[in-house]
Length: 391
Image (cartoon, rainbow, N blue to C red; front, top):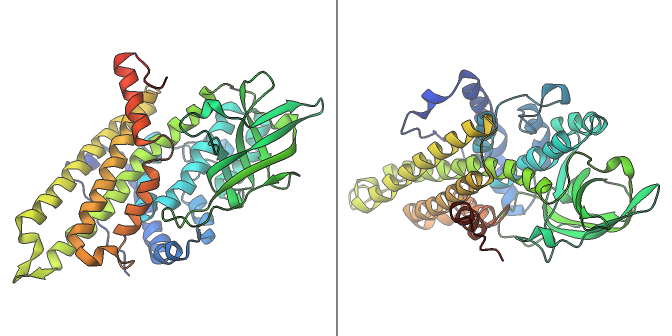
């Protein structure tokens, strides 16, 4: 089915964007229309990640767009990164997950917490997609409480010995390198670079998902894996290290969710104008207009939230709590729009002929991962009251 998407801009937000922002967005949008839209419904139905798009993601700068050029990144600002995520998630949340993980959860920690040798070894290959990465934080028994992790490593003199398991890991089944967070013998959390082929390291795929079906999800299992000492990320340790990566990823999600919402809104608007019932387009009826008017209002509010957050990110002033607010609000907005858009399309809304039901199912994961809807609410609550509700 031809991709007819037209991006809504009710408050002329394009006036706030630089020419570079617009060029980056147009290039990503054109690529999504050409390379993702024609294949994504089939990939989702088959529950297969379309590996053929990895090279293209690298070529449009979707892997580490804000990483400096000297390490293979595009050297772009944070608003450009957000716009790239928005356009990719307009295509599919699972494809955006692949790019988000590579950028914010693999390349970012190597760039920020790694040494020069690690940056030069890994970042250029990750930027092109020659190597794919994954991020190992969540465990079978530790999701919202990552500090309770049991994955650990022991100093064996010449190497570290890693044991444990991570679950719900995007890109795991085909990753070449995993940034894994584990506790040392003193209980301090450190990042380790675990490469495919290391003995005792396996990545079984997670099947039977109703959500993110076009994304590869799996486990990272470590059974006495010998990690060379030079594979420890030296720049930062403690729980703040992985959480810093999550700030970057959640920021990208805040933009990405807008893309999914835009696609659902655009589909519903076009359908409502064309679908005739009782002698006129259903867009002429008050209840349908209410749905559409509320959709564009919420999208516009989310765009303003993301844009301001992007400015703060560019100035290194965005707080974790501000990022949590945007992630929570924008994903909630998107999932509600997906549900309303499905109603506008009636029975057609559940078919693979339209993107809405796929977006809706995907967003059920996005509203949970990288901080659940409820946890982000409590992060805001703690920020404004000064009292933690976690313990």
